Length: 405
Image (cartoon, rainbow, N blue to C red; front, top):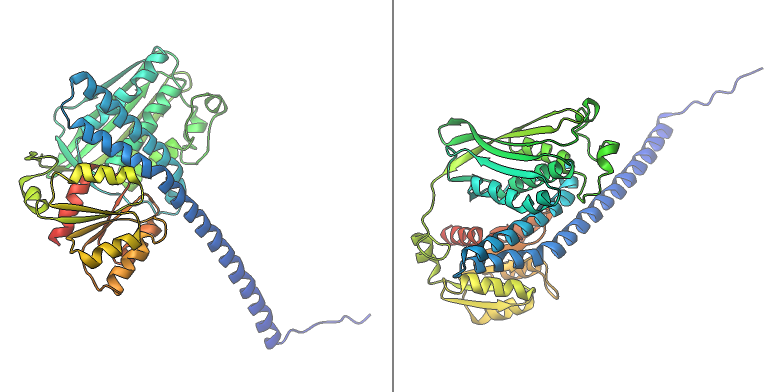
């Protein structure tokens, strides 16, 4: 019986290949749309949550500088630590996708590591006491007073480690320590360790720590709330900081986790006035600043923080108002919120640069931690950015840096 053979000529092959390529391009386009939608959703989520947190953090920080008693200052510190814990939890959710895509960027600022560790332990003390657990903090006196690094990420790591230890410990307690590991020139290798007497981890679970959402059944049944991503995110953040994480654990015998990260030593600043060095005070005192922010609490915060330090602060609630004010005023710097009604910060910046032809420094105040939005701000013509919630010290530092450029 004769066999029919279909011979495909080169033109037919080319046509089939083109159809396959078209199908692949359509699939890629759909995936890119999904990724963009996800990114937009994360940006909106970050903005909605970080914007009020910025006002809470900043106003409490202002309040802490007033004439308070020791007991009042302790309560203020707890509020600050609690809000920073909220930020850490938000970061866990937002950072999951960013870490997977390799898009997390570290932002250095000066901070006191010993204070951060002690503050984190103070925050979790009520939770430990409620379970009749002890919790201690021990910091090496050889540690430098001030380091440069990503303070928020280190807070996030501490929160994840301490909260996990309390969550999975029923008897005994938690020891938190911070030690100088090695010192070379301006860089200290710092070891932060958390040891608990909790339920521990099995060898199988330990081998899967790098996998997100991986939980042992007896650990995941615990009712304490959390994101469930802590150790996975901590491991990735430590790696991003060029550090190492080590875990020693045995089921029923507790857990020991240590991280070793490099931190750059910094000279301690003497505050000559509110949040400012003498040089910063000289720069700020003659400045005319335009604050463009639709959230009233954040305008109140910026007036309270900068008002005593600068010559003049004007306010606008959106980009249209900002442009109208610029037509009749000369400003030294603009603090521009990225998300606003009517005309947002990116649209306003483009108009200022292209239509008004004005090169005034513009500092983006964005509640989005998504790198694509930060890049959009910079491409529009903004000179620098701060991610809400920001510290008032970082606000001062960034303003003076922008003026000096």
